Amino acid sequence: MDSGKRKEKLREMFSKVVDPLGYKFSPDTELVDFLLEQEVKIEKEKGSPFCPCQGLTGDRESDMKLVCPCIPFHREHYDAMKRCWCGLYVHKDVEDPDSLMQISLQEFLESKNKECLSWE
Amino acid sequence: MKKVVIYTLSTCPWCMRAKKFFREHDIPFESIEYDKADDDTKKAIKDDCLAHNSEMSFPFVKIDDDVVVGYNPTKYLKLLES
Image (cartoon, rainbow over all chains, first blue to last red; front, side, top):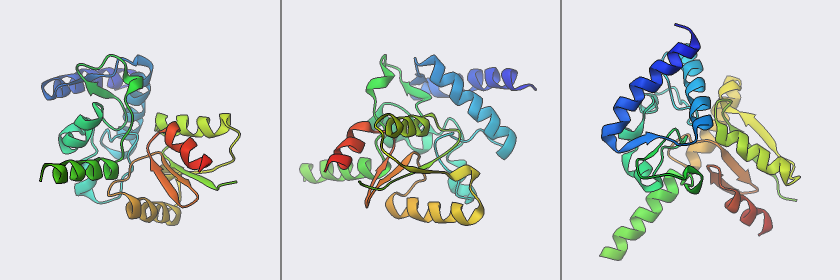
């Protein structure tokens, strides 16, 4: 399958997976096209469409958690950002994806711990 | 001037934006593409990233001894000015 067709196939497949999770493709269509093109390249090279913005470690179990759409493995973190790490998907209610910042996992966990402490 | 090192992925648009930010602010930086690096460099980057974060998320920006994981111009500026 040529790259353009594969890109459209991924778009169709991913759309069905993320919809019930409360996510949609980012309204930034240029970003979405670019990321899907990168995923097609990564899939050709590595065998799966891994996230273009997260590095593989060589540990199969953790690497498989980065196959797009990786939302289920990072649900709390991504819900807090209202987007996935690479920004391919955003929460369904998001209209301005530029307003959403990347929050590192470490920062997310620290803020979550603070919240837990304040409830105690 | 603070030393800036950016670990990136060749496939990551946020890494490209981070590099663009430093270029536009005339701040010299060194950047290394994790996915295109040789095995030894890859291991060094991986160790560095995992020492700060439990995941390998990019861009990974080091400003002297401080680290910003992700594209965050506000944080870059704050660290550069501190």
